[in-house]
Amino acid sequence: MSEAVIDSKQKVIVFKLNQKEYCLSAEYVTAIEKMLHITRVPNMPAFIKGVINLRGIIIPIIDLKQRFGIGDSDHLDSTRIIIVTWDEITVGMIVDEANDVLDIPIEAIEPCPNVAGSIAEEYISGVANIDHRLFILLDLELTIKPPELRKINNGV
Image 1: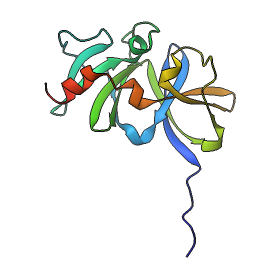
Image 2 (image 1 turned 180 degrees about the vertical axis):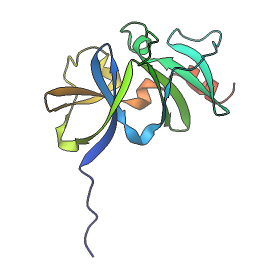
Image 3 (image 1 turned 135 degrees about the vertical axis):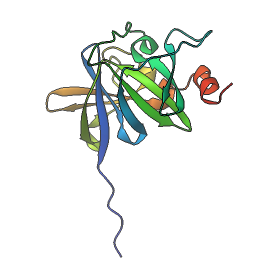
Image 4 (image 1 turned 45 degrees about the horizontal axis):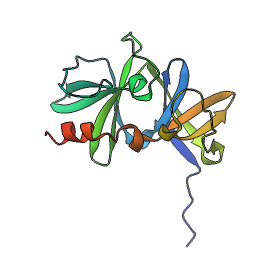
């Protein structure tokens, strides 16, 4: 019959770190939670805050600000934990706010410029400028790739 229509938009979850807007593909987000009690895990890098028990599932929690070297997260009423799953790894990421779901046109996503603003280029998959708002798209795989997270997810 006719060829399948290719979706020309990417649904993303928008969140803030230090008043800058970041986003990640909604397909990887399983939940957005208010701050929960985090149990520390010894001998982990500082950006891995520990684990939470979310409805019977143990999930490692990373502080995105520390992961990207842009400070420490304050735990305010607006602070959220975004639960994501990538390649059988489930991780919670502490963010200042998680406040929007958007459809970003694929053609609006550009490669990362040399200076995207605040975090190392290796964690950025692109940027989009929509309605005078600059969105920095995270490369989720590189963000949650550390071997320490695999150990926690595999129960080692």
